[in-house]
Length: 258
Image 1 (cartoon, rainbow, N blue to C red):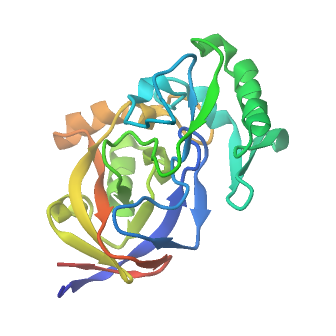
Image 2 (cartoon, rainbow, N blue to C red; image 1 turned 120 degrees about the vertical axis):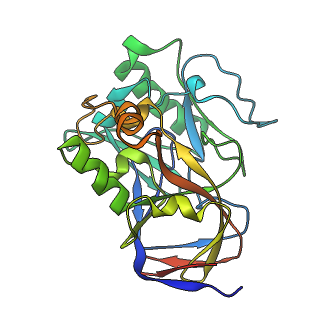
């Protein structure tokens, strides 16, 4: 593939979300394989009461089955860290640890579920349950992909909103810097190369009410989809892309377009 470097455009940040709806985990670099997500991205989710997810026969399940920021803004008031080697999840609130358990074990999953059973008791449909299936991604998207957001597009939205907007509000895997605002929409149907990894950009990302939640405070402080629709004629922010070739991504990698 012959790709043309986009002047001044580079990879500004890499994030994964080991547990759907919980904190982002920043990474300096990551190894990717074709057709797969970032390792451990959305590998776990927390069912809101009895659910339809079957770990023995995993299929895409609507996000309303899980605890998500769209309906449970209080998730943003806790932070989480994930250790891949042991699959240990640590939950903290106000700077103090409130729960810790290995999601690889029934006992560890029970500890995490019990915390959310108490912390989210007013918005649960039943006992919460941590779910996981090897190789399955518990994403909103129906196919396995990576989410790319342009910092310039977020900055344009900040100008319209007249307030700062944390890019994490949009749950990106990759944040690119230096591109013109909204130019990433022109990447749909094309191949983008970041460092040594090629991606097929497949569609724009339509935003939901989860983006209305400030990820640092848990407050619903703005209606992002409505503001986008009113000012830009759409409710999209970011693009979904499928990993095409294997390789390592590093923060600072240059971005090219084929």
